[in-house]
Length: 63
Image (tube, rainbow, N blue to C red; front, side, top):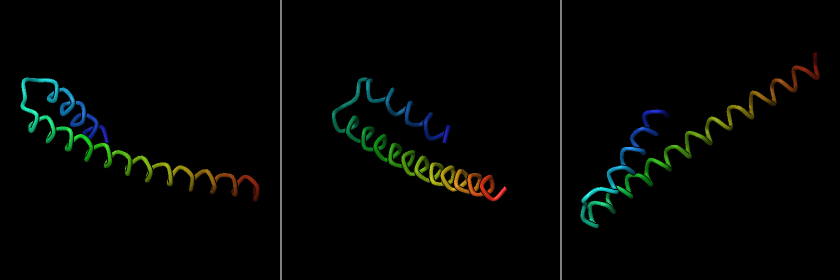
């Protein structure tokens, strides 16, 4: 996930340079794709956390 964030930051930095509109649009499209990837990773991780929380609560109750 850190690699993905680093790529996203580099893409953002590249947009601000001396680029044509087409180049900037391509970079923004790439950023959007990376953001979607990060969102998916985040959702997957959150689901895992929720599952572990449920398991811990159940174990405590069954104690």
